[in-house]
Length: 640
Image 1 (cartoon, one colour):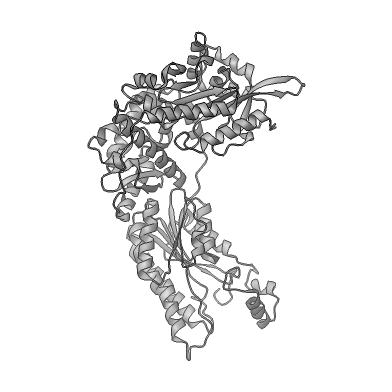
Image 2: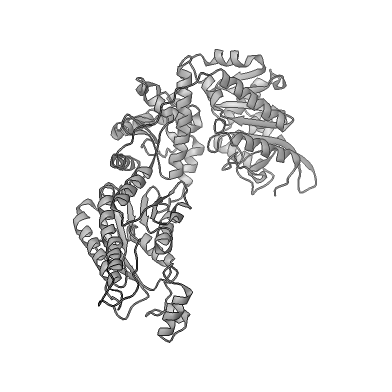
């Protein structure tokens, strides 16, 4: 039930402007609202407060992302002496005029209390850096003067709204240009969206001008990707699930890492309380995961009494790592989660450095941070989470991933939650690049290129869990007598020697996989049932299968399982043109449709079918299987 009005459209534009600047809003932060009217089912005109809904990002918010709340009902809540957070959420749902609208911001009451039509709130870096200091009160007052109202930190939600409601009894907010909430950010307001936005940006610029520049840490040195894989294994064991890593260089974090007091200043807490959900309260300095875990568990036990009711512990693994050798790393169950943590900590590092150059960085107490990290509303979200995708936090490397079976295997693993390193000599493999899809142009017959690509890919995501060698060549049909030397050599180079290099390069990473490594070789029906004229392909695929069997023998002590899938008659690949299909079908006196189903089950096998089987063979169903060859051919009377 979205009604587009001019005021809401103006609020959307202002929201997107704020959301597009990461120094103002990071990953879902900030809140905006507009007061308007709606007509209810009885025909009565109702004053509403349209507030940003849960799950929407200001950078991309649309009118449907605002929840229309009955203003009189929301203001009535502000008159209560106390209201717990669960009840507040329930009351806001009841105040909504649209049952299909998203859950309203927990700060909706505060937005309703401010009398202006438009209210804009961000966690602007400059604002929180100015307030998060030993002498923050004086600095903030001197920077803004008397036309900005500065309030002490209060936990977001009803407590904050009640604080403002009480203060408004003695203060006319229309006499101020904005409200600064210490450790939390800035509110500006006006009856015109552009005016509220202009004031917001001006106050942020004023705060930024009062802050010093920070040094550039410069790029970090290259690191051994195997060292990252080892750390990733320790982090994943601490988290109880696989984690991916992200590594960044050349940011303010590198300048922070270079300080002698890094062990102390980084342990004071986040720039703003909501960050703890993504970064934990403090980063891990160094690589002693066990010590960090013990410290986190002690922190939880010390503040457990702040949680009323059941406490669902959050895994104790760090999300931000600052190490002298490995540099600035972040960890997450997904690439997105690791990226969010990295983005946030870049801004945190800059804030710490600027504050330390002034009166010293000071932020929330551990208890206040814990109160947000284990907020009942966050605990409810944690309990409501469904099972993650089967390969969440895992990394898969697939060769031949630009098209055909290789592409289908990579797609199946990606859709099941894996971060994918996609290799192919075709540049198309890089066109789908996304945060969790890393394409590398690589010819698998080039040994140096293969070793470099494996190291690059594993370094990009922190390790390797799954290997799917799908790249291969099929030489033109020719009898053994006079078989040309070039296609024979190429078949061996790509299908056998290239595989040998790939296996050797990948094994050290697979041995460090948190859930143990897996390899699924894309073989061929030609191994058990070779075809006339296919000597190079049949022999090279047979040799590749032997390599996989030897790897299964050698790598079993590391827990790495190695299996082979043998497809046949997969016609939706570049190897098969319509003309070739018609020729082959005519040879057997069949239609093309019948030729595609020339197997015992009369099944048509597609690349996607092979990809799904490969993904299944990487999953728990095959956890006790290694050295196996699994056909996917609809049943061959030459093999059965």
